[in-house]
Image (cartoon, rainbow, N blue to C red; front, side, top):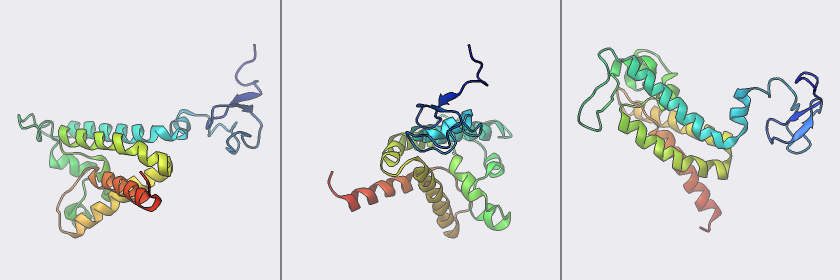
Length: 196
């Protein structure tokens, strides 16, 4: 039996068809150098399937929410109000990348325009945003592709936070602007294409 190092073929990391390890490109999907070790690792496999993009974004949001709860000084809020239940403190959100006039203009944290897309203020906040992303994300991927969906999500969030910062909001977080950008992309596509 051949060891993995002596095999002359492998599954293309993009289309999962059998190709030669030494092929300059996959004859089925055109991926350059499918035998490269850079493309045969779990990280590339996660991004090779465009349908995984929504899951990856949701996982990053959940991980950041857990971090924000862990960094909360006096523990997360356990209020009976569903909109405040498991709410991280403002200090932990500020440390992890909340944006607004305070982080941008006082602390010069321009990177927070990106980081705030992945922070949420309570369990209900992240739940509503992630359910919306779960429903809208696959539609955007179907029409625009996974990488363009990721760009629309990211730039939409950054532009939304920039506008709210220029409007004078002191501290803001959440994926709502990014999700609205995805909705806008779908509406634009539907209007320009016509039909149902």
